[in-house]
Length: 378
Image 1 (cartoon, rainbow, N blue to C red):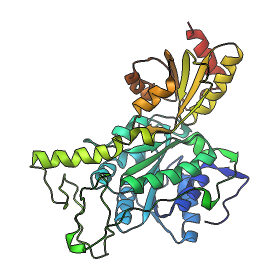
Image 2: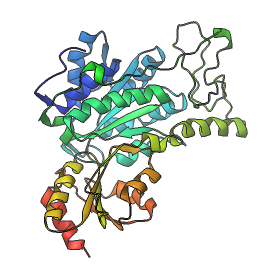
Image 3: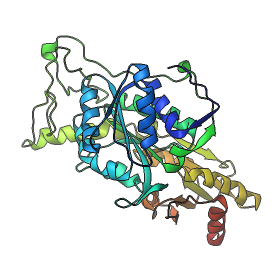
Image 4: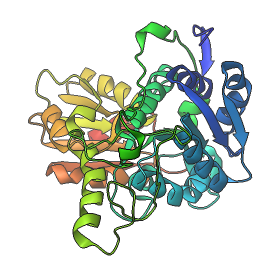
């Protein structure tokens, strides 16, 4: 990709450039605030890089279009926001069971329903993990800067190809619309991953064959392999086995375990001020983490031993890796732009969690977080 180094760039454009760098050559989108800029940048830049841009009639068309394009051999992506994300959930479940590598960008805004189209929120964090029915796993990354919109999109594409699974870039209006001075990595600095393709006689190819890493190679439709893409639970040949308890259970178990068994390896976190074993830690993700980091400096300047942990990989939930980073901390303060969704989940760790929710579309300020923690500090 050409012209990587810009002094000033918007988050949405950085994301698009990251996707193109990673090899995305098909994008299907439908305009929706605040994800429209992503679609606009794709419409402008993707055709210049030998890619195909498709504006669907709605989000249902878009999710299914990128699934089809992926099976045709193209790295594929879509971008949307809350209401469109809701419409995509059935397609996400289909992509999970058919092990189709795709990337979904969700630029979160306030909800429910039409909600707050022009304001930010972190209200889709649980929908990203549990939005479709049945048992499956996805990977979701939460960038917190314009540069990370580039680098984490590259990583999201790589992970989707490596694990043959839907991967989500879970960002929000603030980061997508943010302008920052940024130097993007050169092309040689970020590795890109290509999907594993089958070898040998096409007549013996099994669409979902067993492999040691639990990720089958993926044939491209039209290459001569006999491929059966089945939305029902299926065996290694792709034939439906919904009426066979043992084989259907085996199918679901594998598509879950290919991700969960690598949970700690997939975990991406950032820590600060943990060297003196703080008694409490501010845990956050995405845009809120920017204020949380400044709040730590404020509180430590007042003599309070508090640390900082930013979750970059939100799903799968890396329980042991997070617990290790928290050390001996006895309390977690968790600011989120929702009613406390992820903080409820993190209670699995068995540590005292105090949620610091905020609604209304406006991000916490550092002083708000610091004041709320001081009021509860005992």
